[in-house]
Length: 619
Image 1 (cartoon, rainbow, N blue to C red):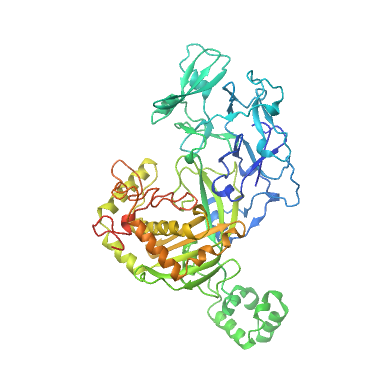
Image 2: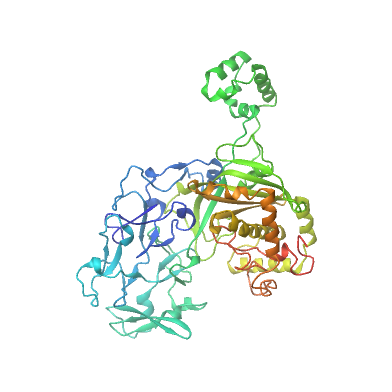
């Protein structure tokens, strides 16, 4: 996807193309409000108000649109793909693309170490004269005395200043270099000609900002740590993606450009669920036509004459009329009870796959379970075709949202005004669905309800919520969730070694249900915007002969870790708010694109017996 930026931060000149990202990244890692690192500059993706919706295709997924409307309001009318014009030539000055603006607004010259803002213009210039090479666009220090060349195209590119500030309400701003350096100055400095110097020591890198006019200097280290906010002004409520300010006054936190907690997406996703093709369901779906039919002959005339009912022409007229009378006697078609949960609808279909609920975007076939796992698995389903749609609802900074939480406390809007549409991406792929035995899971969860290891995770969860000013809601099924999540990660690591896909392209989808309707299932899938995600390598591993080997190896690997005994003996204790126990990068952690919960709620001891205290599901 093309990224378009103006020649200056205020957007006063015509936009030009300066880079590109994959369309899926605009929902997951490089969405609205995120800072995108390009080869020679750093930019932030603008709010939806600046996009061009007329160049965007609409993604049809009613279930997901309804979920987005529940969170953002009924004014949301559509899910849209990234802007794209198939007839457009590769023009570096195209207007079709995602609008971005330079951020941070400060850069540093690599030759003279001059640190300065991009606005007002004049000190740093944008050089973009490379035609179809947008990646070569760069900022140069036009007044640098250490670069002898007079041609800007030969000058070294300036690098973005790597320090910024943010607050827990989602505001983001440039680091206040001028105020920070001159905080202890006895007289105000009118020049504020700053330079940034790096030096190394036994304590790590030291970054000093110095004013060449008055000589004042200060180390950035003073603004770091838990007390760093005392050396910084209060937040002025800046949203650079919306190009506006609002009242805030919260404490600022020093951030490094490229930090992983600078942007977290708040996304909703849904699998495409096909409609049933039975005769009765088709009559119910077209009840506006069949309901008013006075006679059987009139009904048959409509079936023969309407193109939308052509699939019913092979059904005997008497049988079709009998269905109409049956539904009419019941007072008309009764709408299905809305679950209000996207995952619950998917669970119903995956747990009871049928050939009547399949189409080009969803095909699921039950297969035999591997020998030796009857106490664990209820069934295995090979999903040869699936379609997943993801929509970006909002984003957060510093603190990541909880699993499936679409309204976190620190949520930031994607637009300045009322959101009329949201970015979405549809991906097609394949997967394996494993349903665990509900009776075994429920019996085990009741047995370990008072286990100290489980209580330690519960206490850590309370501290985690308290440290982030989030309400703690008791009743979360920790035992069930940790069991399913650990099982998912163990199998996912083994599948990645043999299926032919990279580990980051395999995603998990957990089904735990709710207290009144518990569930226990794991869907491992791979999805891509093209045919890359449907090559069949993952589905093939769902066969019993392959799956048995993968499960055997997964449980064997779960019993040991290269970081043992530290990993196996780890339990969160006060004041730690870590939401995992026996889990680390060497045994269970997965990439952030694969895991639903940012590698939280994991413990090998819940699945295999590494503690010798009766906690394990499979001792």
